Image 1 (cartoon, rainbow, N blue to C red):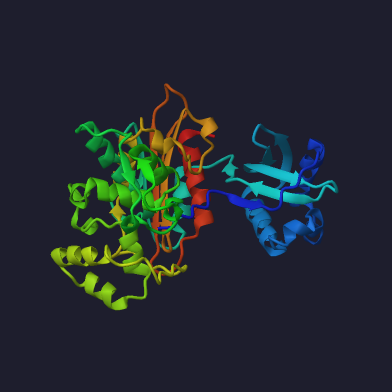
Image 2: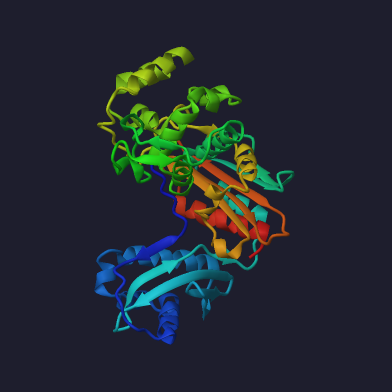
Length: 396
């Protein structure tokens, strides 16, 4: 399953080399929000506008302006700049050409100076679809929740479950992280990831596979680990919603292929019959798969966990390096511990973070799931609101 997490509003164009005074960058950043609409276009190089339309730029400027008010200053930071507005702040990066025209621009998720959990929940509930939120401190104290025990489709965040079972398998046996698995054609899936393009027979260690599964949400790595562990072992302790426990390859073939009769036969089958159908699929080629932006059967063909379960899962993995490679919606430099796994497909969006400010600080699991069976989830808004939730819980 392709994971497309929009963790920020990112407009990088052709980044050209050149020496630019920081003062010019500060002035241009502020001019983006202070200038008249008709003058906005003049700030950008043609090469940028060829890739990002003026309407898109205006929409971003309006979104930040309406939420944060007037811009007041821009302060340089190690990562770029911090834009200070009347009602809050936002990180930014900018690149200018020799004519002081914008050729690269990025705005991160903003933070409101005055924010609270009730306001964030109200804004999240305005997003179309089903919502679940769980914020748990030290895996004991429920700090904030909404429908936290509701099992929803979670996309690739299910890979946390695979990772935990893999750790259990290695701890309880004579197997080692350096054990090698050869890349098999039957376990090649579709992106996200990179291994689907690698040569069959390539030797891969368990640690390589687990790291790619979590950090890049590599589907081919995931299916090799599911095959290695065994479907039944992964199903142990799960409810009927997750039986049979699907490989990502099977997920794509059942949901997004043109084999409608096969899909109907699977959906109407009992558990034993479904297992037989999956055996058939293992002998089929991964062809005629078309994933568009329309939600398809998200309540029947997916992986289902509550945010409470995901919060506990990622906490149990708090010492594991895999969850710390990709820090999701936060800057890992601002945390002692920043763990993350997320997932998405059309109609499904999931973010699960594990965050600790300092070594002596409490550890917070923050998990947000949105399902919409009618249309795509508004990913940018959901990411922005989840970032606000994190800031409200852990501080700026």
